[in-house]
Length: 245
Length: 65
Image (tube, rainbow over all chains, first blue to last red; front, side):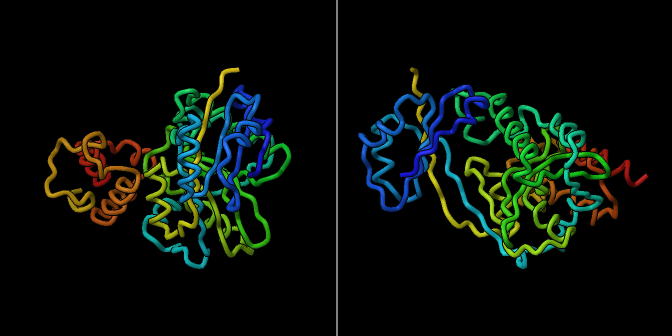
């Protein structure tokens, strides 16, 4: 198993956090798990779908399933730019890179509690929508500051309706985060799904594949990705445990 | 709207609150159908205002004037 001390989550969530990634050759070992997670207040364990042995062990150890992550991929040549819904949301659309501090922080102000409601933080009764919002804002800010990802705005008719970020590695565009603002009309959420493809085309980038992850808790977004012909490649079950120290 | 939401019946009480098919995808399909059927272009604000049957009727009528 791979153990990551998520130091950044202390600022995001106020908890000492560890993430355990279960790898294919791992076997359930409650003692090793307890050792690896000792001293942490928020423990996240990611288990590939189908590992019922781990599901049983984690339930016994009082972990609970908070979400299933779905890994999605799409060969961009399969994306239908002429689809009628895609054409509808891309009408009068601009996808500016939010490069300057001024543009970035102006956009970030629109990220409010309620923009992200289906992630494992927003849905966890031990956390709140405010915690989820802070976590995403910090993630955006970190990426903006160290330029580890490209942050873009979704602008319709000159009005910013959402923002997202991606990273280009070789010919793969990794969609890291995206969403429309809480007060954006329902339906424009499709922008989150196709912003990558539209950005690639607008900027003539040498991208062959788009990859991203979503939560199965967000059934409406999953439906949108399905509509846009993404391939659902892998499923990861995410278990969590809160420990009072 | 009945065709978009694939529901056997639909009346004036239909809204996002009581029609499960009127989700994000449903809203977008409705917009495209209305634009095609009535030869109109809906602005984002108008799309956001369409939350029930009466809203749809009001907005489409206003676009046709």
